[in-house]
Length: 218
Image 1 (cartoon, rainbow, N blue to C red):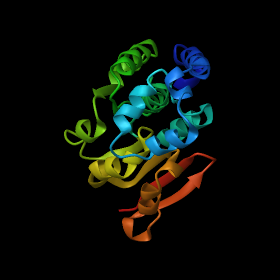
Image 2 (cartoon, rainbow, N blue to C red):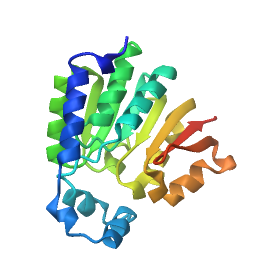
Image 3 (cartoon, one colour):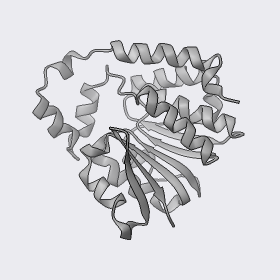
């Protein structure tokens, strides 16, 4: 069984990726490359930065989406936490895997209200809404409590500057063997230093061009 390749999810994902590719943002176009880089790495201006990017989808690539599905299936993930819902493309891949694993729960968090509303519509259209809990607000608050006792997979795909802080919120609940996928982690050197340190309890490698894949050892 592969929920990704059948209706209603397959045509939905194809449509969403096309919409993501076509999206534009005048607010982002006005920013210089240096300003975007500075804001991406800021731990104090991230809410303002991502609010200005609200028209952009910021999805994982199609290849990373398939990777998420494969990792979740291979690890028999039932309990998943995601930082950065956006319009829900990555969540749909994870939810498909959880469905095909026999069911479970995905907690995903997004602070932009319009994206939360659209993502929920997409989860319903894909027939996966029953597996997904969307928490609206700043992840430093929404993921600070009421998490599963054991987490099988963590996806980091929100504000890059907050990767270390979000990992710290869930770290104690990552089961041995849990997988952590960090998209565009090269923008968070503090995060990379942590997961690549032998003393931190992870095995971690860069995967493809834009993903850091880590495993919790203990």
